[in-house]
Length: 194
Image (tube, rainbow, N blue to C red; front, side, top):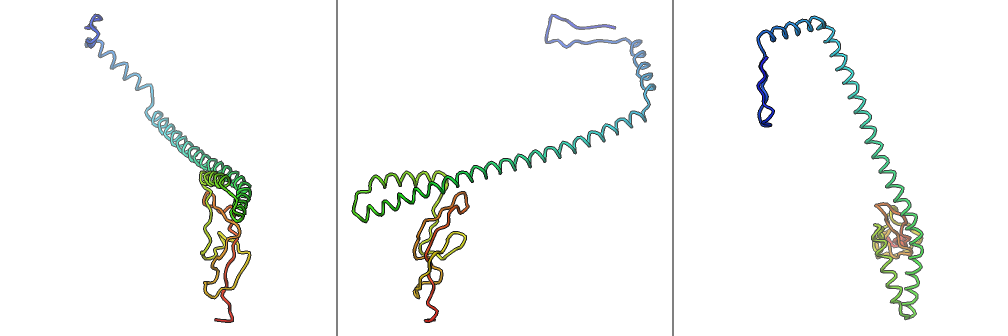
């Protein structure tokens, strides 16, 4: 065997030259190793390993799908829980907000300066907007039981049936759900005149 390599030059590729006698010995070793193993046994083992690999891949896909479903469900449950708590707080907050609105109306009717209340109401409106709590517009609209709750009816031949003529209490929507319907007064046409 001849070895041509220099340790002094790191960029040089080492080359090993093998004599013909040594090559013959290697081929006889390879043939003897092949004869030791039965090709049918190797083929069966390969098929068995492919089957195991396929089973493990299927199980891995199922576990991954379960994980993704559980992750999605957990995220939805957390969002729902947070939104529910925000809505509960908002309902309590809206009672206080309504009191401030009524106080402002009383001050305005009595011609008392309500600049302080106006500032507080502006901050409260900003807070509601920040948490996506929006009022339901009802005045002049047609009654919709998904958004409104009628607590009184008046006769008005000039308006269509179920037209909202008065908001008694403002309703609100949070995260695309009604958290408090608007209490309203609606119209009916006088049936005797029709």
